[in-house]
Image (cartoon, rainbow, N blue to C red; front, side, top):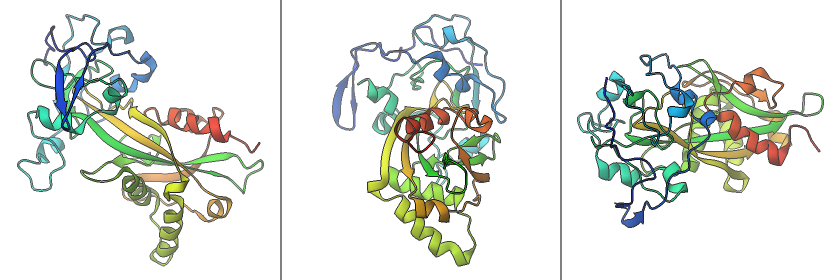
Length: 309
């Protein structure tokens, strides 16, 4: 177990200037804490993690003193094995964090408030929302923000009475929960490319004779004119730690009627199952979507509703 120093740099309370991406940005105002309900899964159990140090919502913010805080130190062997400095093509950061790389990568959550990433005395980046009960990186490859892209693909189901709004979801192999099909943004990759790639990998396991048709439909679905960003920032993910956390860009793509009828779904390599899921609080699987994916789709309801108007 590793104790976080009592005088660790508090996110949002530093007035130092950091140079990130060639520009000087001043962290000059306190970070506004997120509501506790956006940081519950980041304190919950994960099948590949040891038990976390237990803390209540009141002690999540770094600004709240917690002298007894003794988070569990954990990094998964798969992360260590993929250290990019020792393994060609490795997807993980080195064992020790490199401050310049973390600042260059940036953080959507810190950027929203015009703040720089904060670090503790050991040089590790601090989760912008607060404590999680685990230090190091867990299953996440990057120190600091781990950037992902999540495509929210919806349709009006033409085969159901009332044509309810549905969203594409996949069943995760690690936790068994239903989730938006998304994935990590590769270095140098555009978010738009990640969205299309992940959708095809997780929901596009089609027979070879149908592959060309599926790719043509997917290309039409993910064209720029059909995209709308609904969220950019922190994800309340059970893989998060004090020093590594998930952030995402969630983009909405709505299927036109003809495509809605044609687009069949089959699970790919990264998903156990895939389905069109009806959107609404009356659907249990929707209420229990992975991380805060339900909140992302809720933003779509504001513009599309759950039923045709």
